[in-house]
Length: 444
Image 1 (cartoon, rainbow, N blue to C red):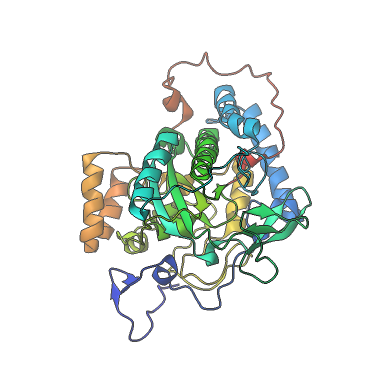
Image 2 (cartoon, helix red, strand yellow; image 1 turned 180 degrees about the horizontal axis):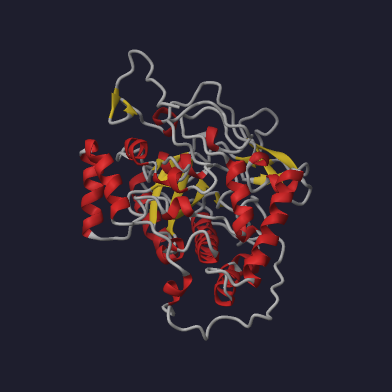
């Protein structure tokens, strides 16, 4: 499908509507857009959709088989590394996808709160939060206004096996709530004063992603979520200690990518990931929603849409063709994972999950092969400069990325530096018992 024609009389600058100040304006969100129910998120469907549950079972069977056959990237050491990467999540009870439980509780850890909240200018608050968030482990920090369109309409509750509403305190019947909390009927209430989000980017291990779709890629995901788990909790408690409300969140409560765009931290790529200037899609996102006034960012256009139109490398390398080769669209794909409204490339999540069930991990090939997935090097910095400022060069840059074989698969032996040493490989008689899919192994 070709790129959708621009509406008549609308001016465009570098692929973005002129004057776009929000993520909704940048991606021309339809007026009919409705808040997304988390129930339909790919990671939540396995709890209620028999087909999705069957995919999960196939994924576990595939992983067990690959481990026992000791395929590249599925050795004893790779497996142990992946298991260890999720240990902090299991220990703290921090849920990647479910809000307000254990480690990511919406309530302060300390009963005593300051009598009067800290007073500061929005600029000072943003500067302090940037410093503190990075001290706690974030790699990039930005600030976004909380557009309610990006907050889930419902969250999936694993305890009750159903979905429950997320509402704001200015909605009828909830005006009395000035603290974020869960009601007896399990409705979650966000005070209307909580109008800001601290958005944090966490780099994923470059070497681990280079081994996608194997367990090393999965381990890099787990390691990043583990970092997210303690960074968001600590930052939320820091904000509470200043006298304000705070909701720590990884993939729950609200959509991460639009908030990252709102904060000026990236753009939406063909692979349905947030493309950041520094790490490309090789990152994970978290946020803390709060009522502490701060200086917010705004969307930045650094050429992702045009480059993705020219490149198509993630789509060409997708083993199951879940990523479209055509243009962006409003047309919903043949599944319920998309929220119709933003102009975007329509990833087929069902196909994506099907391939994940074959490889026993959350894949990551579209991250590995993306030309934006580069480390810090002056050559890559120059390339990004040309993408931002000389967009006619996009096709040449994309071809050069292929020519120099960037994004190639690297085996786990190369990762561990043991290419010529077989002594680390496991005994062939070893039998792996694979646990059921956990929060840490969910694709996020």
